[in-house]
Length: 149
Length: 451
Ligand SMILES: [Zn+2]
Ligand SMILES: [Zn+2]
Image 1 (tube, rainbow over the protein chains, first blue to last red):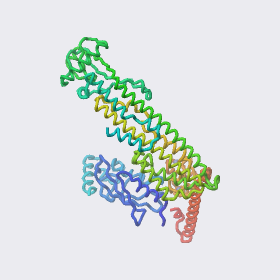
Image 2: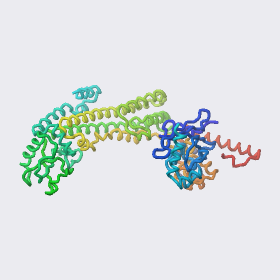
Image 3: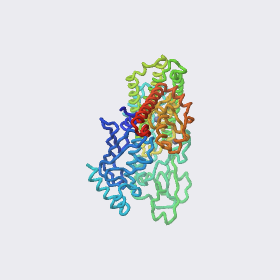
Image 4: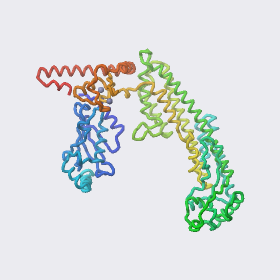
């Protein structure tokens, strides 16, 4: 199955003009499957951490959004235990004009601005709302334990 | 000494035209002038050391002499350097604290000499440099304070700056002349290229494809400005620009684009195109070396006189186009609008969904354009909103949304790409039909077709 032009172009640009703090490399044997790393944004509890994600472009991409999941454990109200991400542009607000790079930027922004009112990980969100400093401290601890290796 | 030598050497070696050489900054003459300023200041009893300590003491700028009422840029003649000493008109207490005896004496002399000609309000004056900065001395406060400026016109200083500014004026004139020549050259090349690269319908020996490739590589090479967003499209240094131009050149050779021309004029035009870029580089080199000369001479001036010209002078001539280095920007603008943009590039006509040429192009009511295949897919998936602006414009689109003039434009300027896309579309449709039949036979759900 030949790779659609759209995916080829996106991959080329990701390599030629990488987004600062974001790295996405396709697998040699499956060009629809990307190893991704995102650097935790400065001034966030994730600062200093490097988070690994997997990204897969489904058959009908870009009509449907890429499938993305955190592989590194992360304490965040919008990311659950399995690494699934609650982000509108990955769901109903997806537009086929969006790209891998724009989506990864959105995820990076989500790390900088957790939104406990639209949670995926309910327990984390609960804690975030009840005792934000403690939740942030936990996020920091997790970052140190899991994302700084 | 060293720079004076290497400066004149570079001017000679670079093989700049005679009128350029003549317009270059006269570094040696300016250096002589600095000596005169030094002499004049020391006759006033102001050595560099004294001036330096004055500046340090007050924390204020001794060298505010460079025209408070800044003249309009370009009217350099009107500017008159002055040494302004602000003194306390009331306070009888002599100078503050730490001046050395020598400094204090020479300043007092200076004030006495100058106050004879200016109006003195209140007997004995003391000098306070930059008193507006408010060194709070109780004595002053008690008597209420009035300050007074004493202005000392520095003749040789003014000579130095007049010389320097007139140098810059002639450099500026030279540069705008060179810029004009380059621009009209670019426009001429643009006109000629439009001729040889006109689409086949108008020109059987069309060199549209090789020229498009050349311009695409040219833009990608980012010769005078970085083409990277992450680098903010920063202006290149001369050296880097030279490097990028060489890269562009070798890429053209590697792809053998010069041999793909059908029209013999094209090769000649390609040489002219590269030539005009070298011209820009030459102006940039000339500009760079003269800028360096100016920085050096101002540095020397400050070292010898401590008048702080380096900080004020560039500001004074900031709007000067010679320093504003707008040359590359201006020429690149002309290059884009009158040459590069004359040949449409494929990247500007891609469907934002499939990234291939938007054939056939459908224009939604929000005016965004997609290829018909992608639009059909959107409609079948019941997506209502435009992928670009999210307006509810997808489902209402029908054959009347086909942009026929864009379609004929694309077919004219991108005949190969349009044909290929058309074939791909047809193949895709055939595949879908085959699948539909297949599913019919085996009873699969119909709406699988578009997945
Ligand atoms: Zn398309
Ligand atoms: Zn739209």
